[in-house]
Image (cartoon, rainbow, N blue to C red; front, side):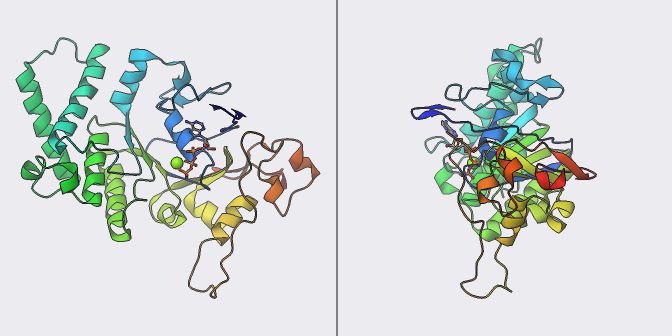
Length: 324
Ligand SMILES: Nc1ncnc2c1ncn2[C@@H]1O[C@H](COP(=O)(O)OP(=O)(O)OP(=O)(O)O)[C@@H](O)[C@H]1O
Ligand SMILES: [Mg+2]
């Protein structure tokens, strides 16, 4: 990222694979680059300030970083759905849910027709809108909005936070995407509503075969919901694998610290532990392993070379010199 203070090296050596059908949980401290990583897949990080100097992002076998204009729009419209953290800012307060959903559905179709996907199919405007309205109602029903034929005419402020997030999920899956990117979709919701929304996402994975990249601060959520987990630290994926493997036997000192920091009822009052220190500045990150300044196992080697990912068991990768 080019900032007023200099170039901030936000992502460095991110190595992340999402397999079809995965529900991958991406966790890590605030500011470690989870959102930038996720939004790089549909290339939604504005350029500038972002600049990609190296690497590639392969989606359906093609490097997204080489895509532009219509083909980029088509890829997003056809294959990727996105849900953000705050359901109120995701919706426009001055339009009804219907207007916004119909517009979202139509703009998706327009993005596809621009590249010929819908070419030769030219029904009248009214007919197109009517079909989009029907699809919107059907989607609202699918995400659990009661009486969608009536509720669709309401404004966002007439919905509860959980219902607004359901609307946004409905919009995100309106184009039948393969990949859903959910960036902290439940952080703004209370715990019981949070569980409902997460259950909905899990149902969609089973029913329509979605692949999901779920960003969260909550490892409990990942434990319950995700088959795979990736742990990020200061712009790098330091550990990834099957959720059960990583949580049972975390290998990277940062993952170990993160798991120890989860409060549980056995901990005495005032005993809460955390990972000592804080995330380094990305303007001038430490050479070598970015976690080294906070790591109890750090040795000289850690401060010179960046540790490449090693496979410690099938599908479980760690970037740490302890496992070389
Ligand atoms: N538009 C931008 N301009 C400059 N720097 C940015 C921009 N967007 C993100 N960054 C920087 O990139 C880094 C990673 O940010 P990111 O939003 O990906 O973190 P995150 O892991 O999603 O954090 P959180 O958990 O708080 O959402 C931060 O240091 C942030 O300051
Ligand atoms: Mg974020």
